[in-house]
Length: 287
Image 1: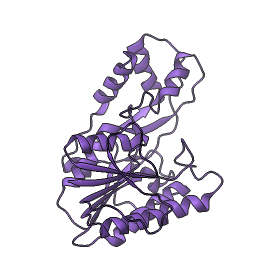
Image 2: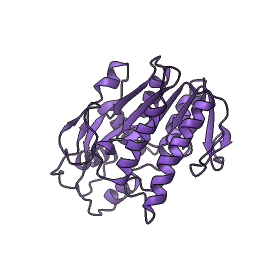
Image 3: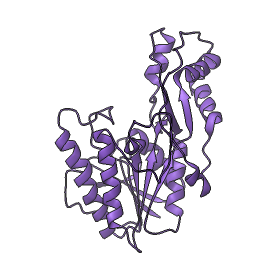
Image 4: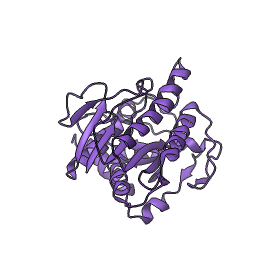
């Protein structure tokens, strides 16, 4: 399969690009400049270009986001209008260009943020009415709707509403919890927090899976695996490393938890707690 992917050099995109290329697909990274540490074919693309021309392909995976470095929610910085324009209008133009380039399917990495944060502790289903309460969530929802508008019998669109992604991305040494683990080893006080998580490899498996489904039209899937309290995560670090840092208190509030049974029904099998333990153990061994 000829697959175009945006954001291939990013933290999440690296997992997806590695999986898709490893399965024998012809993967082309779309971006402003080629990444120095990847062998992927490259084609120039910028979200600010409202009439992009894309190489012919069978499918598009869109996981790029214009944002301030290191931020997703709140990534608009001091320029929310530009953030909205590039991530909504730029995304719409990208989907249109993908359809014109012959893509039969587009996978859009959306977010749990489309549900908003008002339903803390509740179970979130794909059939629930989205209620984003952040600009990031609004932008992701508008991206979903832009994709749905283009779908027909020849062009399928799938939005994956993704939770937090953990794991060390291919080609990188650090991960989302590197600073947290450093603070724990240094006895820095850590704030309580509980969040939902999925390993990047399992997200990549979800993308690969939905690319292979024959359905047409538009569909949405939740992608989430674990409800994880920082205290439990750092307890694993302590058990694996022998370091006895100061554990944070258990969080008193829970996030909304996305029900991923719809994705599991089509064959998705995330690694669960076993994969989390393996990740922590490998990190403690320096792998």
